Length: 335
Image (cartoon, rainbow, N blue to C red):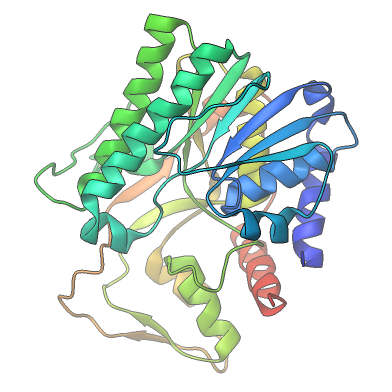
């Protein structure tokens, strides 16, 4: 069952983006049951236009539960690391499939790298073979590493410690980007890249263990927010609907072989400041600093500059306070 807030989010995307550009088109979405994948799929299916969606999923039962039945939706049930095969025509590809757990970056770095590189290569191969109109690869702010600059434009790369297994995620994202650009250069595959700030909103699972989910669950359960570091990492964030509109914008208007930062610049804050925002009469911020390796990113200060994306006509709409209000309310209604 889909919550009313998630339904609202779908309707807001359809209202705020001209979905007619996808009329009569077929779109392959990888990672279709993930947070952004399912929002992309549902927005495309509910747009009122004749858009066909091919959803690449690992678990058909889970996919059926999320999407139900539609004569404009079909599933490719497979792992992203397997060769993708379909006889269908494909016009666009949105490649969202990725490892997202910080714990896995540390405990399963080989699998993290393999999924990023092999999975992306499989997607690029079908993009090449189908002679698609456009593809978006979802990358991350982590490609910027530890940076001397705070205001980060698309060519401001910093230091990544390649001898640290935690770098499996950031390095493999960088390499996957280079693979995308290489397929564009060598085979003419029309790929664009979005580098997302940490993104959250309605649809986040209670099982999600990323910082925004931990904080949201603490508020819901009337528990303290426990910080295991000083919370000095500072970055901006993005609400899911703003991210999906950015994906659609770059897919249809972005420059081929180019990358675009996606974030709400007005959400720039430290982890500690974010925690303090959620403090109330019951939930307090408690520091329990220790040396346990939880897979956290090194302390960084990264404010993604989104001017390049804004030049395509995109603007974020949801601020930090509303991001948490919608996420928490949706989580409370999760079955």
